[in-house]
Image (tube, rainbow, N blue to C red):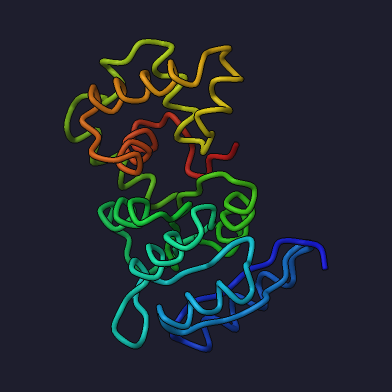
Length: 217
């Protein structure tokens, strides 16, 4: 079967049913499985190999969504996971990205936002809900200085491509640089921006407005 295959992970059956109805009303989406715990999510991922996992943070049975994201990504580095949660703090979004998520939206957002986020993640992009993007931007503005201030034009462009989900090889090809040169730029950018991890770097780029709430490749 064609279309974007989706695995739904939430410990509330009514929520999963709502997601299923929403996504299957859209052309090109099909829900292939459901899970209500971190352990079940991991097993379901290995069974169905979906294009996108829609993952809640709070799950039944002990381990939460962050652990499920981390576990799935350990098994499959290419897994594309969209976190959908009640938590609207920027810190939760950062932790989700650090765990390996490709997107983060809240359950308080519009239905159309969720559909767009699933589509963005399915195509290799990074998705961030409008409310979380505003929260991150507010935190950055409160510091009174943009994290991009110390970057040159080439560094800024490389950061934009990294935050959009491009690989080192893709960036090298787009800018006619060697992969080693891109890696050196990447290291310099992280150092200048004080980013602890690549996920933190992406979070800072989104907060600075370098990529939109639903960046795509």
